[in-house]
Image (cartoon, rainbow over all chains, first blue to last red; front, top):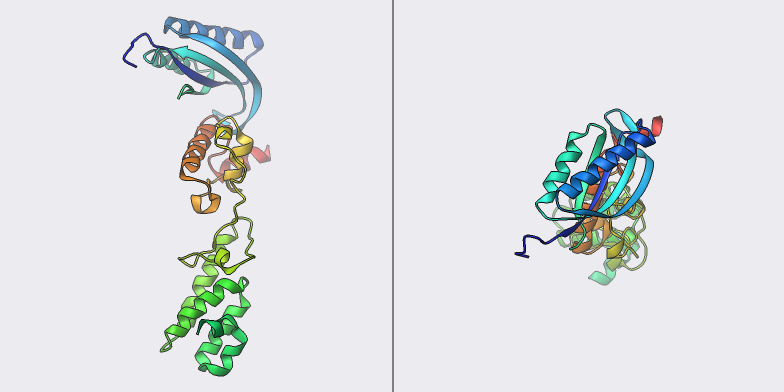
Length: 101
Length: 161
């Protein structure tokens, strides 16, 4: 545990606003992948849920585009990835949870 | 003593008129087992049977149970607990395994939520504390990701359009 280079496993789900086209989604997701790499981690798996109905409106949107990533990140890297998610206005919601416990 | 109380029809002839009124009120409400249990209290305290108070309590319990599937059958021990509250049937969390509890698994999680989107308490779900903790956590995560509603308002809003 004291090892600072240790990577942890995380699960990231985020919701993109529904009015983006394929191209925009891909570039947004690419920027996220870069952020993960810059934080010293990597994406180990991806699951695209696609367009889903929201259980309640977020920023007046009733649908959202869901993407799930499995990540390996150093604990300090989480903040950086979160920052890049927060900076994008097209990301309606995100959730990062540990999965290795 | 307790043998006689089991049979409510015998009582009116033996007891004072106040007690008679009490048993009548009890027989109107469904779930005879637990009502008989309350009669025990009334008869032990023979000075002034608080018939009205007992009635109110019984009604409140009735209302509380209508939020979910009502099922009071079988032995009396099942129907009422120490506090006089009827136990809910073991239906909410039955056959749900701990590994299935996940914020992505909306299908399973929605069993732990009523029609207004509120999380059932442990008295209702009858699952272990560990399970209940994980369920609550998972539901809250699912709500954050708009996989589940926070309030009844959300359910109405999304249904309309």
